[in-house]
Length: 122
Length: 108
Image 1 (cartoon, each protein chain N blue to C red):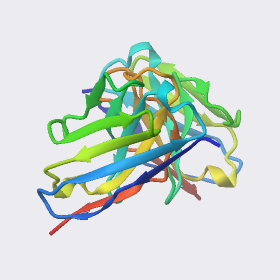
Image 2: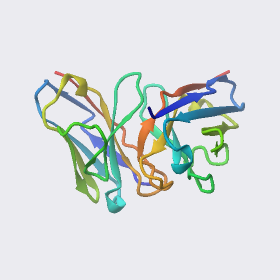
Image 3: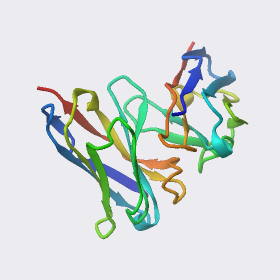
């Protein structure tokens, strides 16, 4: 079964840092681009970042550019999101998702994790 | 940035009825790189349609997508009880890859 499992969420103070992880199983991890998508409480979906299959190409939303870094370790089948200088508006459920096609610049996502919750508050 | 507008915000229908959801883009979506997702409370989104009209694996044929350029439609031919949810469109033709605000389909 194809699965994605996020971890690393929690409560952090404004200005703090957090690293999210997403462990994958059931598919050839190194053959697919991946993305992070977030959803603030009671709000809609917001694409955050995408990374190519080998990690050489990345894309970011303007709202996180310069603060968040997406990366992956294909030897561990794991995707990461390093989040620095966190703000209250970063509070959300963060989902990792696999691209349907292995094209980093075409993030249509066919497999999603259950999400991990990040709360930025003092 | 391509801004997506979905209408209506809420659609109140009965099981068995037809649902028509609209997604309009602020500029043309290249090569119909438009997807639709379904999300139920407390769950992750589920891909329904990609490329404007292609059903994802395992999606029932009562779901269909159409449109091009700036106007796209998701149609659910006959609503089943499990179809009451929020539906999002997403363009993946140009970064930033934006989502619409969603249409909630609830039971009348």
